[in-house]
Length: 251
Image (cartoon, rainbow, N blue to C red):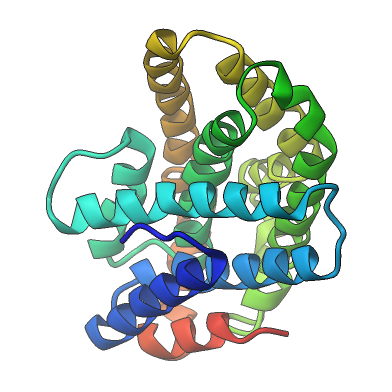
């Protein structure tokens, strides 16, 4: 699955969502959230909020293809990035809650893929001309990320209260705010864009290792948080298929 347009990205995501519903697979959680992100970006392009709409569509497609490629490789049991492998492998385990599955996907896609996509769409010193639009796409991402806790309260009503007791995960959620998007992901994008192509593979590998360590925090947030998450998991409403359908709804 490699898209050429945003419409194709949306279509491919819908295939993953529908397949995940049929298989009752948690892989559909992130695809459902990402579907919302893509629709928001597409609407932003139509509304002219970006400095260069054509460049942003190209960026969106490159960005999405990173996920689509990783998903396809995993399904074919082929090697992909470490952070995506960790995220996908958790889909066969019972205990991760919906929020953990979403965070694992966002961790890989935002912390690794976003910088790579930005460097490809604006190589060399062109990356600096891309900063304003990079910040705008991160505003869209952050707005959706910041609403995840509230939205998931519908799956498990006391989730918000328990998250306040899990400071480590709360800190991780804060990391997905504008600060990380503008500092960490942007720094990686500028570093990657300004090094020779033969050096980029090593930088991506180093970044992948760093991002993978963040994934460990999501999976193992500490004894207290893990215990609370087990309680949440046992209380989550609906089947996996129904949760995917709910997450797919555009507000």
